Image 1 (spheres, one colour):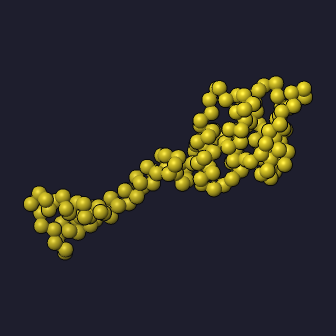
Image 2: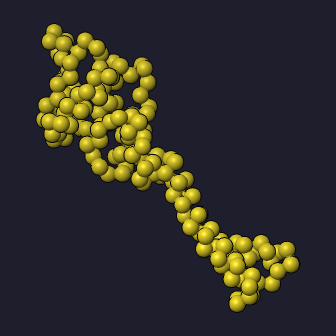
Length: 155
């Protein structure tokens, strides 16, 4: 039901108005309806953008900026998944077994190997990454790594 139908139905129920096509009240309601329909469209978009699962534009880009992360994949669903994973990180997620969880944040497929004597964790990526992406991801993942370990990313 659009704005015009909604308003005319409510006014007819009062019994005070007879809304016939071509009448002044009909034209007045049409004018109101035009403005209200635009407003409803904007409000529906705003409502969708407020929730990550329905966001299509700024509802995804703003949380991505907040968590300051690189997303290798550009599909909307992968962006949603990445933001949700990043926002689910807790202070208890700083162990080696938790690093797999972090791969999901960056939408990267790969495998970790740990070399304790060299104080190094190597990530062998199935996803091809540029040097810039490697640097950004190394920087961002370092906040989740044990402080004595260094992350090395290989393609």
